[in-house]
Length: 277
Ligand SMILES: NC(=O)c1ccc[n+]([C@@H]2O[C@H](COP(=O)([O-])OP(=O)(O)OC[C@H]3O[C@@H](n4cnc5c(N)ncnc54)[C@H](OP(=O)(O)O)[C@@H]3O)[C@@H](O)[C@H]2O)c1
Image 1 (tube, rainbow, N blue to C red):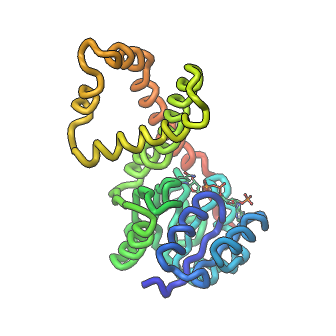
Image 2: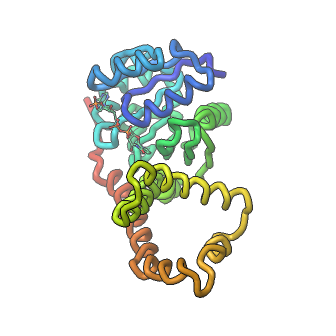
């Protein structure tokens, strides 16, 4: 299955995370072709993972699977640049870009392409990512299987039936990991203010989040029950939880999710339509 060449256009954070997992799970460096705007990241990827560096057009010419890993605002320029090569090669196109829908991408790249859109997160770097996947109607069952199997090398996957569904998953999967790191920073910051040794705060804060997640997964107990085991009536935690709740944690999270979904929807509607030539 992985005899096919996988090309990346864009070699930034997420491409690096995917490449790290692909290489760790046995995909040969010679089967991974990468292009990037700046040379520095490309050389670092070549040195770390033995990938084949290329120009954008070369990457599109070679890739049986073409992973578009540039920011949404750079996707149109890149697509127009590689469209002739893409039309000739007719690869399975996998877009990582938030918000740009398959119809727009199909228009930029030519037409009649099998396009899979994904929303992964950066934990793909350690093979523990989560990726939501959407495939357009031209994607064949074997192409779907290929896309899913590639992202399974990087963690777990879930399919969504619509592009709207992918937008809804974006704050949860793509951004959620950043919200949790922010929460860890808050734990750490409060610990430091109490004078707890800075040498141990980061690790203890991360370990607290890790063990909490592991315990919830292992016991399968409802979260309110696990919270109740800590915040016993009359105990020290109970009044502090009330403070956190009244500080608007849930409302802030709702707002954060709405902002991301809205941003995804706006990216696409703001994208200029293009009919080159
Ligand atoms: N990071 C996340 O957690 C996350 C999660 C889900 C989805 N995504 C999506 O994944 C995609 C990549 O995100 P990222 O975080 O990896 O961004 P990133 O680190 O900024 O990587 C984007 C890369 O694209 C390169 N690039 C820009 N214009 C180019 C061009 N014309 N030709 C070739 N390469 C070009 C940039 O090169 P230079 O830096 O050299 O200019 C950069 O290395 C985005 O579409 C994003 O929406 C990201």
